[in-house]
Length: 356
Image (tube, rainbow, N blue to C red; front, side, top):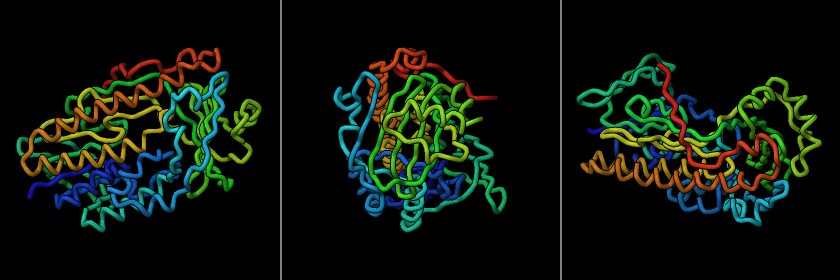
C-alpha cells in the first residue's frame, strides 16, 4: 500500500496527518517532541474557525479563551485605525500550542493514524521511494515511504536537501516569556524604540514576547531581569512585573522556500513559509496549509501526480499575500530609531544555504 511520512509534529504536520487519516492513506507522523510542544500562546484569528471545525477540533476552540478585546499602542501611529493589521480588527482565540498539539495528536490516533516519536537521522531519496532513518526511544528505525511531507519547521530539513532554497526577510528575533494569566482575555501589541511587544492569553496563562534584532535579543536573554526592569518604564500597556525566569528565543524572520514541492515530496507550515509574528497568521497558515498538504498527498497517492504542484502554487500565493501584511505596520515608523529604520519593507529575498 502506498505510504506517506510526515516529518514534524507541529500544527502543520498534525493537520496533514489528520487529512491523510481521514482519507484512509497509510501515514506515519514523526514527532520529535512526542506531543510535548512548547507552552507559548498564539493568536488564532476568528476566520480560522472553519479550518478548526474541518479538522475536528471544535473542543480545542471551546477550551481556549476567546479574545474579547485587542488593544495597541504604536507610538505615533494607531495599529487598528489604519487597518494595516486585519487580525487586530477581529477577535479570535488565544491558543496554547501545547494544548492544541495534544488535542491534535488525540485526533490523529482516533482516526487510526500512526505517530512515532523520534528525529530524522537519514534522508535519502531512492529510485523507488525514500529511505528515512529515525532515532526513536526504542532505537533506530528505518522507513521507506512513497511520499514525504516536510513539516520540520523553519529548518525545512527535507526540502532544502532536495533543491529548495530558503529566502529570508529582515533580521528579527523574539524573546518570549510565559507568565501567569491575569483573568482578562485581552491581546496587546505595543511599539517601543528598540522593538515591539505582544501579549496573548491562553489556557495556561499568558505569553509575552519582545521582537527586536538578533544581537539585542541574545543580549537580553543573558540578563533578562535587568532588561525587564528598564523596559517597564517604556511600556504603557503591557505590564512586565509578573515576568520571571529565563526567556526562550524564537526566530521570527519572514521566510519562504523557492520550491515547495517535488515529484514525491511537499513542504508545509513553517517549512514552506514562516511569517513575522506581527501578521498574526502563523498558526492559521500552519493549520490550513497542513490540511491542504495532506489532501494533496492523498490525491497524489491515488494517482493525481499534479496535486503536489497545485498545492505548492497555492501555498506560494498565500505566502506572498501574508508577507505583504508585515511591512504595512513597520512602514508606520512609530519611532525614528535604528530598529524601525531597518524594519522589514518587502518580501523575503536573502538566500540561505544549508550547512554541509
